[in-house]
Length: 278
Image (spheres, rainbow, N blue to C red):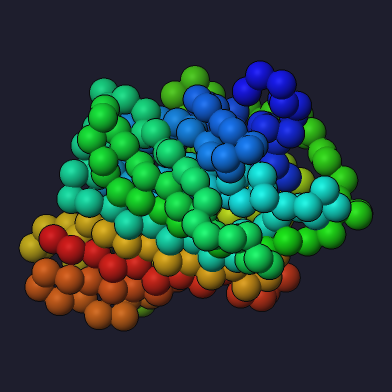
């Protein structure tokens, strides 16, 4: 990164320093000229608070950070980027990255095609040298005017935080097949335009949708293979903000579920679908 502005390389309003610190995201390499980024993030020991199983969702945080940064590199000087779509595909060996002693997952991201008005980037996810999945992020450009860069005081989460602690979420009992995960307000989890970080919200969607599919675990757990997220509007956290997962179809070997992130304003902010297998 010699000869380039360190802030320009490392800073994106979507994944500010507080998010990077909270989830242990580290820059390994970056090139403004080539629009490439390599980042790492530990996911070992992170478990779905509904099922207790290793959680795939947090990989979306790394995907949004790395691939979103690549799109950020392609903006004009008077523009910032916000995510509009995110997709995550993981292989059957992805669970290896979630064992308690697994090394961090590394995301190697690069641009796809020309930037246009909705730049697309893709990243390869590896753990210990083994490929475990891929992720894509499509972004939209927004005017830089009015974006106030904020640096909130870091919220303490303890020495050995659970995934619930890191994401500031709380499981809510439900009386039907849906699963509800409340998103508490935490300034560390917001981007610099004051809304919940897109990758973090995508992780919440995966947790709720996966739990909805795994309502009956008598025949074994379904494991998430794909996650597709659309960002509909800004997601504001508050006393009623939540993720709601609903099963679409649960068969013997395949499960499909939808999830929505509903903001404190009562509006659907993100929508997702996951596919799982066992």
